[in-house]
Length: 120
Image (cartoon, rainbow, N blue to C red; front, side):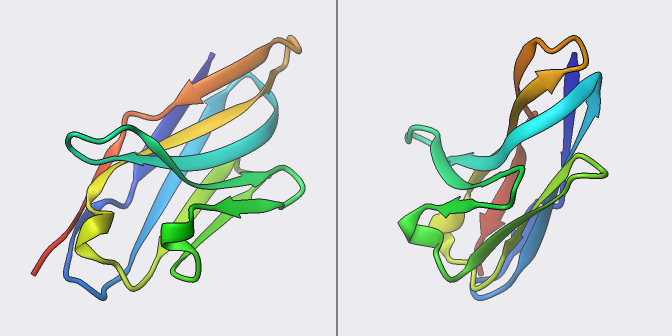
């Protein structure tokens, strides 16, 4: 099985920055795609950013130019650098990783979520 441990959330003022981390552990053979989603109260969970094993990235329009996703394949870790944060970025942020286990069975895992609050 695969476990995801997230860190880096918190309270920040508008215009501030935060960096989220998500470390995957377990019997991982390869992580095909790693990404961040968020869910605000009353809203559906939405994709924020994703990155493939070869480094291709995809961002939600609302975060383009402000957020940057990156990954360290050797550590099976994905990061989300969030700059110029706005109150509307307030949400619980979830890490998602999918790929193959060492048994070559596919996996699709979610982290427990980390709260990001942007407020003055």
